[in-house]
Length: 235
Image 1: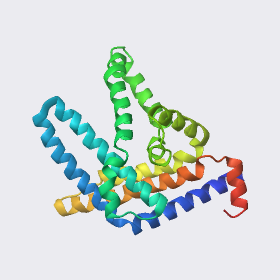
Image 2: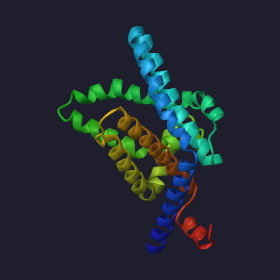
Image 3: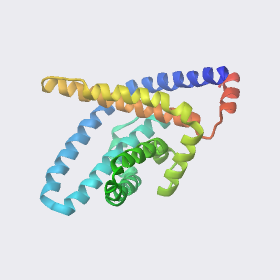
Image 4: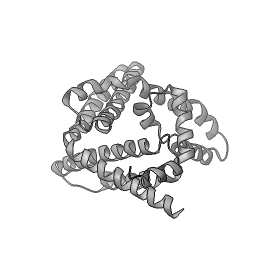
């Protein structure tokens, strides 16, 4: 148990150190958040005028921005750098993968959620289901860009990954989520301070996603015993 803890903590150290170095090295990616905000605002203003069609187009815009983020993280994790050309290609890279995940969530919220809310304890049950889904499908973003699975395989593989690695996976992820929440909720005053907050939030978001990607690659396909063996071998 002690040996496994030492190996796990060393894995965290490597992921955080490498993630910080890559995030700083690729600091221009923080500008992508401002692009996403601008695109979403423009899309939202157009969607209002287009009704149902606008809502559908807005869902594509949201998926494109989400897929772009995942693609940029993939480039950083796999190659150590991201270029302007990568950014220009990123919006279509995982568009339909993200659309598929969003559609599955939409179906649940449109069909299952209203039915649950009709029961006396429906709200509590719904919150429990959302929490369980958040836990079991937490690795879906990494599986989209590192695994390239179909929609059903995304969810089933995420379940298998979390079932095998939840002890190692969640402590750093919860810590990173707290950091993101603190940056997001920190009170700022004035446009300049708000821009600075968004820049810091963007860079920390990439740092978070990079650490998750590095941690996922260390955990995926390995066991606690194999990680201990690799640690002993100095790898």
